Image 1: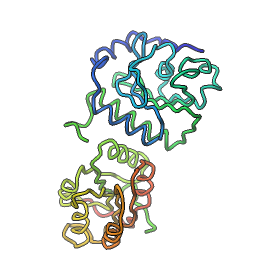
Image 2 (image 1 turned 90 degrees about the vertical axis):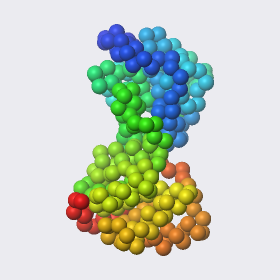
Image 3 (image 1 turned 45 degrees about the vertical axis):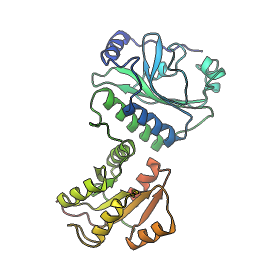
Image 4 (image 1 turned 135 degrees about the vertical axis):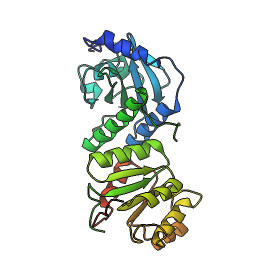
Length: 168
Length: 136
């Protein structure tokens, strides 16, 4: 297993994440509705808004997963925040970086993963909107575009630029 | 309907659910399918129809009949729009009564739950608007 790499700007990234004052806060409908929509739209059992803290990934919103955090080292999202574009693993059991990952060989038995980095207006990436399936999947260009748009909605909410008034 | 809403064409999307509405409108714009204006309800749509001109509408049919009344007003020429403006609809389900009403209202496409963004974009792409209206 390849542990999630630590980006060179991690201290700046962590500072930006902490300044959001969002870690360990209760669930919020404005985020929950996006992961619920994503899980339904893509027909995946797990959808998450994952924020990458120093030693853990913490889920601000989650569908299909009981735990609220896992260690950063074994997180797929820890890999996803290192690149500006979507990070996709079609079949984790066939990927040397993840084949023996505890999240692959044990619950939730990840096979397919796709994460869209959540970048703040200052350019720092604090986490991902990610989708997980227990079977191999392939997303096409339209799927990528839809996920990218949903990611933009999450990023806007994080930046305080979401829909005012708690729209349905 | 064979023509498409051109990228310069203006489409009114009437959809109460925020995530679906915003995702469809952003993608339709990004893909150059249409310039989408969003309305959260038939009441909001009614106001927008009086203020701006649209080349086509995609309307969520609600339970209280407001969306059907909006379509009736359009077809009856009770708005500033041509009575034959292309209309597509989404609905949670469809019985014989609704199907007949859709036909009466000349609704060109009816999309049933579960709605997918992809399906709504296909409907927008297929909506006809041979000659985009002048900007209102």
